[in-house]
Image 1 (tube, rainbow, N blue to C red):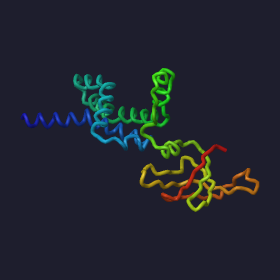
Image 2 (image 1 turned 90 degrees about the vertical axis):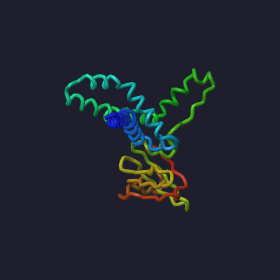
Image 3 (image 1 turned 135 degrees about the vertical axis):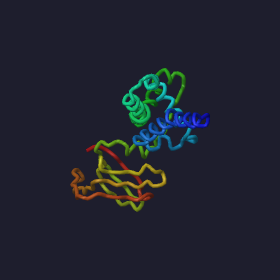
Image 4 (image 1 turned 135 degrees about the horizontal axis):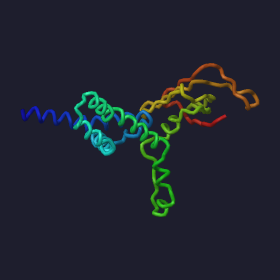
Length: 203
């Protein structure tokens, strides 16, 4: 009997303090793939995010402990373990993506304290390609071949540092005056290690 209680306690601990953190971390990675890549202790990250979830949703545990309705218990457990951690992870990822924490730290009070914030959890590559707004660019390859491209929702850039390949959904040709781009109705895939520079802008 004691062993069974111990097993149940272990399962309860995992459900309450590890799974929400895992769900939140995966949601953060949807927005910022590099956000937790450099975290040395993944378990600590999971527990930290789960602790945040616990602090915000502990009232749900009280209700679950007192309710006699299996429907209410199941609904609250689903919200606590999966839904709220996922939503909070998306929000945290959005804050990281938009450098909200860095902007807060850049306020005058922190400048007066000579605190210099750094961008954490997102590489320049991910910052450039995580924005889904339609933009255009000029890509120069290692052999100096130049392409004029469109970067939008149907484009894709790998978030893996070891596989920096990229797909642009549309390629353009430039008229002889250099003032107008005309689509040639095809995409462009560039494997890793082939890009020399990328200039991105809005037309």
